[in-house]
Length: 160
Image (cartoon, rainbow, N blue to C red):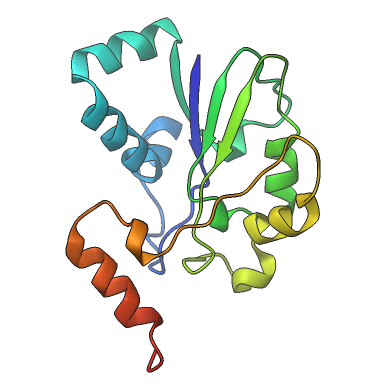
């Protein structure tokens, strides 16, 4: 089972009220996860696997109370979790599962910035804990398009 999650956080702009049911309200925040799946496999295969429960996409807010066993779990945009959300998410870990937490500490959109980020807090607290590891990437690791790496370097350079 593949479980994909991310926090429902706006990137700077406040969108205000969104019409529709709960799915209509959270789907815009989850759209990048759907996009990634559709890049990896045909849409009909994604839809079939989601209908069977083999693939699940859910906002982090819906994880409380769950145990995610026999799963490969990916939390995307983790820099936008609070410390409380990150602790809650990490403690959902069940038997025979693997978890990957992705995020960029330079792209925090939650109030309070990096000081309130659950990602930064988890990396600090869990360093050295058995079964936990980190990998850090640089502009050289960008795979979107070659120009994106140069954009990142320009924004992070000495004049930034």
